[in-house]
Length: 508
Ligand code: AMP
Image (cartoon, rainbow, N blue to C red; front, side, top):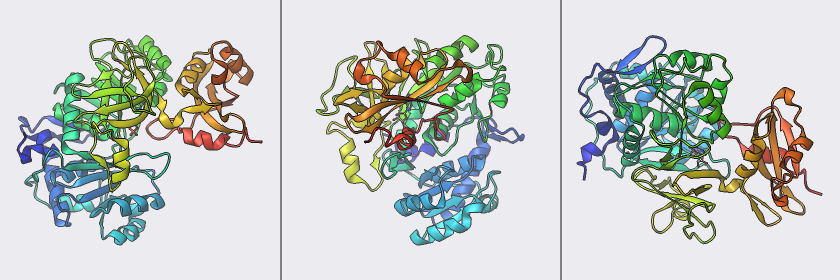
């Protein structure tokens, strides 16, 4: 059992930093932040938080553009024993009102342009407001500059909360996933090991830091390994290709890979210095995996996780990285597939609900005990909501979110199966398959397809290609050719947007 002090994620991250001059973060404007400097800045900011009345267990909410100060705010909150609550920068004031009144933070940090509106909302829950702009400056950093760097890291237990991340929630109310100090530390340490991170690594960090991928996977793993990261405010393919010459790892969402592939500058030579490309947060098309390997000589390592669970599975570092599969359960994590109706565990190759258990799995949804209870089995497994199967070699394959399952004429249709068939057609870039209310069938299988402009692929061509390859009940009733699929910032296709667009097409 850890002593309480050691269980604070901040202590676990930074205790034993042997060389405070070691580089932690590099910015392209020339800023270089050492480990010693990062710890000192977190100490200054933790002092400001305490002075503003933030007590252990209080929430510190932040909606700020990506900056080193934004990352320092996360570290300072954890260090002060508070619960860090990052918010997607795209949220409007109207949306923020829900999060603020639900989470009741004692402090809210926002961009100066939003401060006025936020103050009105924060006043309702008695929260203070500080500002931080895209350059990492504002009332928060002004105050921190005058604060002492020494701060005694607040003692926390493994099971105490370190963060709340609201899920993207495409249906119903967005839920706050409560993550403990040990959830975050144990998962990052497992990944350091699994992905062979060392202090020689240099990570290209182009992900947002309000999401589990950029905040926990990318940042915590780098810091635990005493590696360094090149911190980029946004994804810029040409710049990233240049940076690959001195980086060793890149973590990205699938859209990073498809967009990088569009650049002629992406070559085997340009990627020669990189030892590992990681993809996650959304499915990486098997085609993209293969194209990337052909062009660069690197097999992208795909892993699978979610806000509630951190990372669950990963393709191996040394073994086969299978295109379209998300690899095996990480050490310490148990993954099983169950019958969605009965909850009975299914054998290899059977499709069902993916469930996970381990030190990575969150504590529950903030102030939603009933919802929490209904998403856990009695034996502690969390019901992810993802449908998939485990193959004979223990690799997990994801077939889509449970809520995206199409039930047409009483038959289950797994969108991924139809999407893979369409993706394999020459001239097709990608496809999304959705269920749309249908007067006769309940739902009609509907394909939305993006094609090469000059390929001349149309609805008839897609249907003809599928004919004979798919059972009749799986055949799309309609195929729509579009320029692009709607995606959120993490590269996930927004099927709810597509369902909304096409609703009504099969109703009499
Ligand atoms: P989030 O909580 O925003 O990280 O979203 C988690 C969800 O993203 C998971 O439940 C999956 O549906 C999806 N996801 C994450 N990684 C992958 C992956 N490698 N392949 C397919 N889906 C993924």
